Image (cartoon, rainbow, N blue to C red):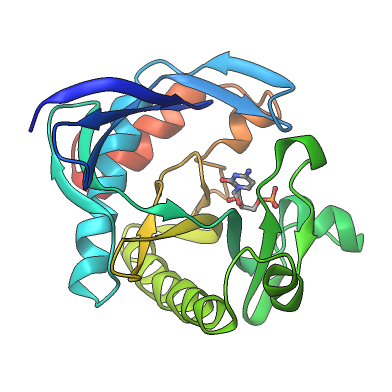
Length: 237
Ligand code: C5P
């Protein structure tokens, strides 16, 4: 499949058309943003890590019965994916308190929940991605009731798979963000990426943060942390 014109350039990825309208090529950049684009920087080699790690997870999740957009890794930064129409929803699953949840409810980070929680926000830069519930999502026409129920079910299934994966590697999966899309047949697929940019990953022995929070909060050692999770996930940097 041949790469054609640039369709879209986002904060951390570029998306190209291919000569088949059913497929796209995603290219991962080293650019990093936080605080809704107010903070910008570069994390050397991040695009390579996120591409590889995301593809690894997509393949693992497919095996666990979750349909994804993944088709084939083309090179260290580029992947062929199925074209979907993305639901403008960020789906966030949490196992422990952290980040915006801890801040919103005035609690400390690191409190384990009795059961995983899920929340949704409306992907809208101008509104700074406001939180919404499933009824709001349907009211706004972002998805249908059955679709959000499927998304919710997949969200918890993905959490179980990822939690088990990281636990075996000495890492606690604190929370993560995923996105879904719909193909032309109306099938809901996991899309976007799963990487240290979109997950909170804490070392179980030391409590060290091994994810994008190092960049968000200027903790230093960003590249090293990404390298460390890559090594634990794939046995290589
Ligand atoms: O900031 P907050 O606590 O809501 O983030 C929850 C999880 O979702 C974190 O793992 C964070 O990396 C991820 N996230 C993301 N993209 C966003 C917002 C959150 O990947 N725009």
